[in-house]
Image (tube, protein in one colour):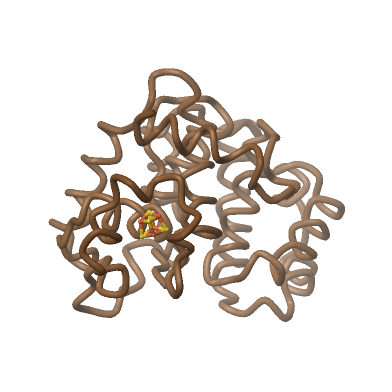
Length: 235
Ligand code: SF4
């Protein structure tokens, strides 16, 4: 089995049951992506539920008062995320009549939606054939292929994005994107990856060379990038 097929086979038995999975609703996917930036799943989950309940559509979020949005966000930290999310909801409500753009190319033009979030929405909501590269994916790819490109440099990021594109299966690319991210979160973890019971172990360079702890290479602290709340978070 190749890399992608191995992850696709691993995923159904291991994935966490999370409400933003298995939904094609781009608004719900976007909410989850914004909430989970800088936030653990366990902490973010009740906020996701609260936002979906209080503001079931992007139009509802756009129409809400800033005071209510900020109150609902209270306790989650990084408050600029909530303010920017509210501003973007208004843009989608007005300029896009409440409908999310359906392609990565259009999504990325929206204020506050960067490379990662645009790819995630395009893939998970609209099935676009794009690779989603987050901190988990950097880690899995760097370890499995033994890549020492620096993920804190634009050149390194590009290298991984190019590689991720080539690995995308022609069928089920959306599930594959979920699978590799979940694999990084649960199996190929930052500390103490579960190499002993890993389905990728036989081909893994980091396992063969004992480099799990030194990959991925990150020479600088990852900085907040371009848009005000779009972060790459690498643990
Ligand atoms: S063998 Fe270890 S380092 Fe390699 S992919 Fe599996 S969990 Fe990650």
